[in-house]
Image (cartoon, rainbow, N blue to C red; front, side, top):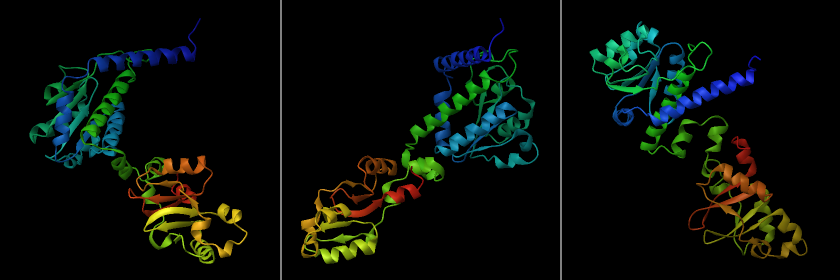
Length: 317
């Protein structure tokens, strides 16, 4: 009985999984030295490879660049026709070749040697031309490819991609590259929105609907109408004492205009901090069926107001 596509898929995944476990168990001896080198270069990490290795190299360069390590992919064919000028003596170069004998890398190998540019080889052959020329070798386990003929780059590219991820994350950790840094490099799309802080979108200053406890409700209603948030923050000496919402108005309709703001307000309103992730603040609003959160600092002073529409406009849903 012939194998089903699902049978083949499971074999491929099992083969690559086994190889990844080997890579973890046999992590290249030069790994720590490579991380130390890349942490201290003044320029960028240039990553290159040919064919499928080139696609992996481009992905590794992109991952490095987005996690705090300046990096660039340079195509080896283009390098031989002028793009070697993109590589400077302040850079380090990572060259990827499963066999270590990719002839298109020859000019880059020679260029690095001529100008004493640190070179890192990712290959599975320790005695190859590339490995022999490199300053550091990130040796991949000699694991079988996952395809039926054992030739199509499958396991080898998976291993290389995973090793690139390991490098990027190790560098990221050593640089102290956290959520805020990541947000700077990912301002677009849902990922960037997910990393925004409340402070990035909150209303502040003259936009805030602020009254004090002694403000007549006739004036408080004007403030609520003018500011357009449907609420008024009741503030004493800069600190939030309460909030007036549409619900508070309905509950106090009788004699409302003869009352003071402090009499109508709900004390101890829900608040958030400027540094809170926008996604977390939106979760609080949704869970409590609210449209507005007051924003306070560590001293409980009012510094802003977040409306649910601000989060939605920023792309947080």
